[in-house]
Length: 206
Image 1: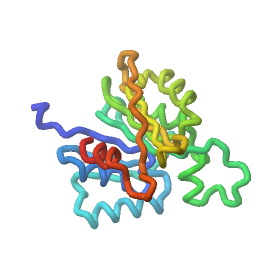
Image 2: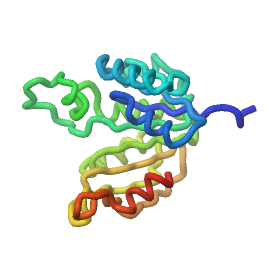
Image 3: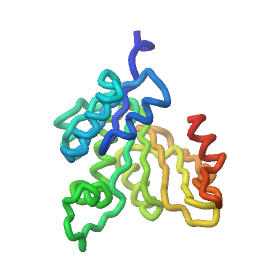
Image 4: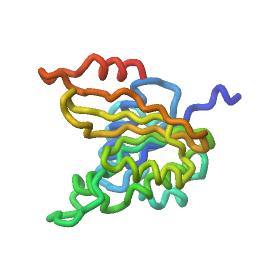
């Protein structure tokens, strides 16, 4: 019975496993796989999952996003998420292979690698959700289109109401029809540094 099948969710570049654990906490009935290339981070993620008793719900795999077709079956996931490195340039770094630099800069992969892997993993009609930087939106949309991922929702995130957006949330569907919704900008903080009601409402309702 398909109604008994778990939703399969894949997190590309899972780091220490925070995203799968947060998503699991929002709702049951899904199975998560997190892929992380850095052994240290993957080990931390595995230990956190065991500590929280989530071994049945979340698996962590240490591997390269560029090797996804060798590691996983095509079109086998309902949702793919990613919070990839944002910065395309890595020149000038004293130690490019430091974990924080690998997480922030496109040293071991680039944006196209992430989107290509998402398209490979997703079932037809499946959703890809990504956090990135606004200054790369044109490149993101171009690459999504190249891999038949149709943008459906775009939301800019502002740290404060009077500040420029510093994050971009984008959701796309594999094989979807052209139609995109531009959502109102999400403001994170009030002037006093507390979270806005809108942020808390979206977190609780999604």
